[in-house]
Length: 410
Ligand code: AMP
Image 1 (spheres, helix red, strand yellow):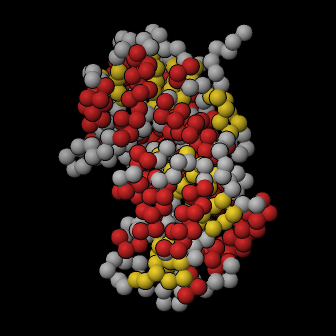
Image 2: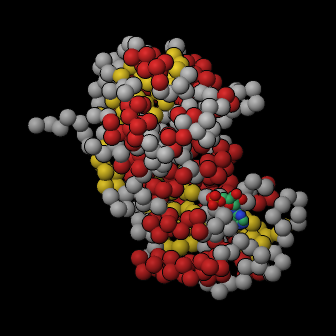
Image 3: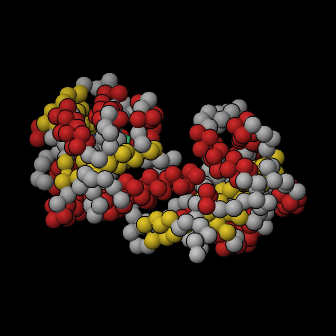
């Protein structure tokens, strides 16, 4: 007998989960609880300054409506810390969501209680109800079962389309699934998981990872996991200097985590044993201080004197990285190559973006700073997939099974 739905596996380091995606589910006559991530930036007048997160959830909401369902959509916004706070209301989202859907979106001033129950209960197929901020209740972040049970009462089916919060076991992400018979992942979640799976677990080779950012400590688990999967790792950013020092180089005032020198050596040895190429910077843009308008110069990393710090990769390194990127069939990138926030030290990051953008490889990029550098570059559309998440993307790179994904495994 043909399966009722297609199971798609998502592989974490310790576990494999099988989840249902939205396009394999039936919504006719059903009320569907969609957990979205509408955590959008607002200005002082409560205007949304970037609506990408709302736009990304539209396909999921529209799909449910087109298939004869009604949608109860819920999200958090900001950090109200378990208290009602007007500045964190989802009212501005109601307006924008309604414009994007081209239809009225109803609103409940509380995510539970009589009003939410009555409005959800009265929903007809094709209608959308947005609930007020989930984090007005401290129980949300505590993954409280009772709170989750009350949310679950509002609908028949659960869809998680909030990938960016799926590394958190929160009530609307995890505990709610204990009360729902049918659970699945929305289109945004599907895009995030399948792109990642394709890039890291089922890649066309060579698979090249580009890892940058400030510290090795923040990327340790990422490095340990990807070493088992990739063909080459290009290391840039501040973290490169711990690796260079571990090779016996003097790196001046550059960012170094001395307590991780041994770990860096172990990582390089593991890479060698596995035949994974690690490419470190050969030159850097160096200055006496990390600030704008100070004199700076490009020098070999061997020329770093005690008064200098490396703040970006240099031209030779850009060229070396470029050769590896050119041959790659799959690229995964996280972390800037230098202090890209300051123009003087941003060239390495933007050069690498140009190289990825010019490559025909499948490219998957994620992380907060990486995303903002990419946006600044105006080359977003040249990347195969840009994750909407920071922390959740990092945890996937670390090989973890995210609680919000695991919870969908029924
Ligand atoms: P992360 O959050 O670990 O990806 O780190 C991002 C931060 O790393 C950015 O704010 C960059 O300014 C910083 N960064 C990149 N390269 C360097 C460097 N060479 N020295 C110090 N900080 C750096």
